[in-house]
Picture: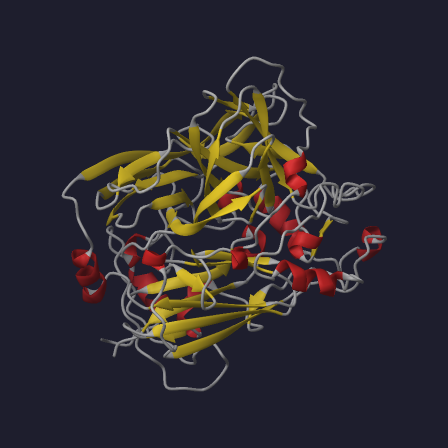
Length: 548
């Protein structure tokens, strides 16, 4: 393979089918001086060969996605100007069966370039939707066709991977059904959570610009928030951080964390959130001030409603499409049985509520009672919530301020969950370990991996290099004072020696989370914080396969 500079390749242009980038790089992402490895192309022979090996049903499922600017109704008279797919919020659900080939025609009617990333799927690298790493961005007025085999059943979703476009309305659920589904249930409801500011207090780009000025600028206006330095040392939180990571720990954190100051009381900054805290998240709950929290695109005053029947077993597929918010989710009057994490089956686990970070998905079964019940997505530590309703009989709907007691019940952390036996990784020592230190803070808004802020146009300068067939260990070491939902593209890892299979995991302040996976999907893949503002500010890296 020839050794070419990424920028030279970009200047030469990429093919319409997402032509790969023939690249080389120096270093291993740890700052050491090693010979530059030659990386596999995102559309090279190794990627094509892996795609051919996927289990293929022979069926094609074709959809058209039109990214467009326009007005979207959030309910209760709240109409906002935003960007969305085909004017819908969330975007229309894509549903296919494992082994089907998804053919998705993207038409870009936005005023700037965009893409579609298929979050959580192990798909061919040149269809991953990450400009300029795996494809050229789809220019305004342009189009692109994504084509790949969706091999693994589960709950996934799609969104752009350009700037902070994720924090507009450009997202939707992607459900890959199992043709041999082992779960037994009567009905299904896809629940998409979101935090919303676009068209209300400004745009996500304006919010990012405000955050990137940092607390070092005009810091006197941010006093009295209980923080010191970047995200601050909060007295008494160390013990709670340890508790949150204990297997089987029932987290009873209360529902009023951050209610006194979580919405930035006394602040004139429309974007920066101050005073929001949560023991579940190890301290600081978030950066961004959102005027609305949505469930299936609706505000609490005009909630989405699921119409069901008492006694029937309902499968919930819950997706957090938010930009900055972890949600604590509970269905009033019911207990959940958690069955899947990030699309992969679990040993079934009872729960009263779930904590779901941006990018995470959980599936749960619930047997419905008779009446009208609130599904509440508490914006953790922020003093507000999203609301939807489950109606199976007569009765008055609860108020938008309802906070069911289940929110204070048992909340199993990810480390407390166990994978189903058929998806557990076989025991094996890692062939390569990448220690990835999460760095930065609010003071300068300099979020990074290993102290190096990511440059998308020079992505391969310092890759975390792997080779096909290796067992790879990622050690996420959080040296910051804030939690980070860390996401790996193209793979699903296992938490620790006996944890669930996931592609996105919350790493608490001061904590280390170990994730193992098998390098079986060649190409160049992002690792990043799925807080949209942290990732776009530099907390990203490239995991890249090199030639043998």
